[in-house]
Length: 414
Image (cartoon, rainbow, N blue to C red; front, side):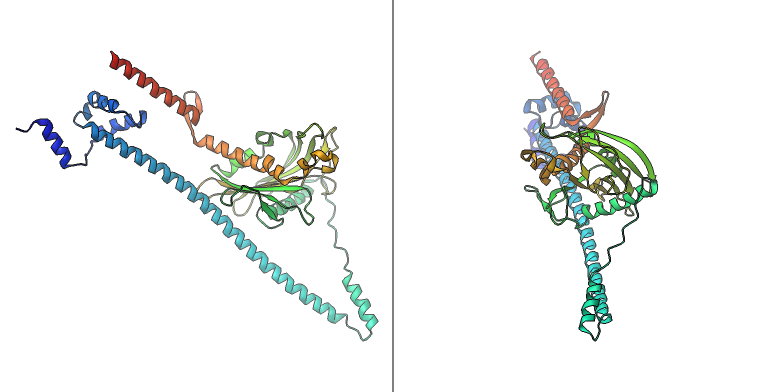
């Protein structure tokens, strides 16, 4: 005669796949949330305590948990691959845009080359004379070109500042996305969606500069708000004061700033900067925050020196923030400074002449801070005490599991 247990085992062997009811699945999911990998004793206890699982064999529950952990692992891997795919898609779009821009630049240069060749040929024909002396004289007159017309001096009026802002925007964009300087990749940085490079100083490129590019999971407006607050992400920034704010076109603003930086050593004086910041929106929807020093050379309003600081110069620098198709923002960061290295002892002069140091202290610091903020926003939960970081959430869950395990052990002992 076949017993009930033998009949149940025979039925399980005949059908290896077990169909769980919604109530059973809900009970298993609750246990999985508390403990993804329960022990054999915990599974047997679950069968005894949960009425809906009374007819399920503990071995089948073990198989269910194995499949559930496998599905969770696949889900996390799928999310990671999707995030990587978004980064690669954004980088591919940037490279295609850069390729189109370079092709247009080549076409423009070819056109200008042909035009200048034609002008030179026409000028040579016009100056031809029967007298060799007249030919040489007229050729010299043509070769000595008149000096280019100088732009009219600009003042501190809104129109003058707007002229400086437009010029700063053009120069910054040529550094951020163009070939105005020869960028050299920093050692240890691999090319890809998150690449950071330094520039080689040559052919009239004054000072030192650094460039960074990265993708963060935040909207462009929030990224710009964070990056404009220098003391927030740059430890070397001692203070920053907004002296004046003027409205500009395209929903933009022009700000006059005074900023102070700490000296890297006690052997050198600290630096301060008198800056103009221009915030605007491009035709493609990109958000631009560009900055440069104001001095008599640019024709802008000057500011008296503050003792004991040495006035540093910021060449056109800033942040180009583009919305990404997969969410978040693609950011180009350019920091171009002239820190007057001649004014410090020779032993600390490399601190003012190294592009790598500028990259590590400024460009990379800004990008790392943005990633930190984006990571904290993504891995946080709302609790009764406000926003809680993921590390605290994991610790609280671990303490909860330990507490439930201890209570279970106490109940078993009783």
